[in-house]
Structures are given as structure tokens and as C-alpha cells.
Image (cartoon, rainbow, N blue to C red; front, side, top):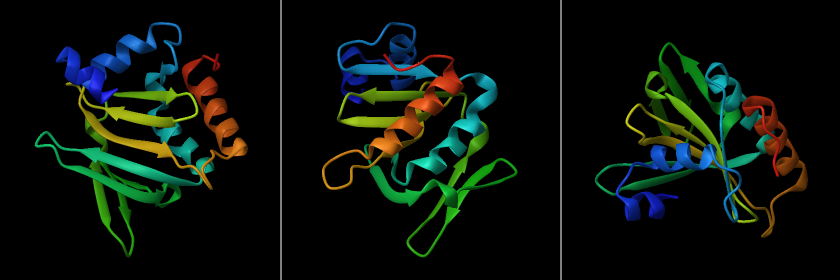
Length: 153
């Protein structure tokens, strides 16, 4: 998705928004989370086991963290994870859109985007022994269906 945004010289949010209003495009599927369900979307990731958290900066740095989303704690406007390995603090007030985005058999993620279409952070499912756990995928698609009003195709 980032490569498409770079190619068309648009924000990631614009790519996600455009794909979310279309039927599944090739192997990509994007569904926008209902505006009143952002926190519920984050909480749904509690059922997805170990996750990869991704944060990208405008200067090109990429941070990937292996985490359990049950560790997130919302304090006022800040979403935090503090553990032995790292501290992560996300300004939750900057999250203006949330998208489920998947690339069949390769990536299943929840993307949190700001007003400018920039990625605030992403939570991606992780493979176990080279495969996605079927129970985890079922929980992911169930959350997608419940929070976007659309089932997977």
C-alpha cells in the first residue's frame, strides 16, 4: 500500500480510502471502521495474539515492535504500552480513520490514520510457523464484519 501511495504521490490514507469504497481489488481488501468504533477496533486485536506494531516517520525511519495489544492502556488522550523492551506512546486524538487492510495470505492489518492521511500506526497479524492461525484469522474477519458492516469476500 505504501508503494502505491508513493507511486501516485498521495498519502497512505488516500489509498486506503479509495480501496475501501471499491470491491476487493485483486488480492487487496480494505474496509473502513465505523467512526464510533475506533477503540473497539483496537480492543478487537486483543483476540489476535502476538502482533507486529509498525510506526513510520516522514524521514523514512520504520519502527517495528512485537507486542500483545492487551498491553495497550488509554490514559486521557494517550495510548500507551510500557514494558521491559520498550515504551510506546501514541496520541490517540490524532487517529481520525481506521481501516482493516489485507493482502490475501500475506498481510492482515489494522491501520490507524490521521487527518492528513498519514499512518499513525499499524497492527499486523503475525504468522506462526509460516502460516496465519485460522482461529486468529476468523477473529480478524469477525471484527472486520462487526465494525465495518461488511463481511470478507
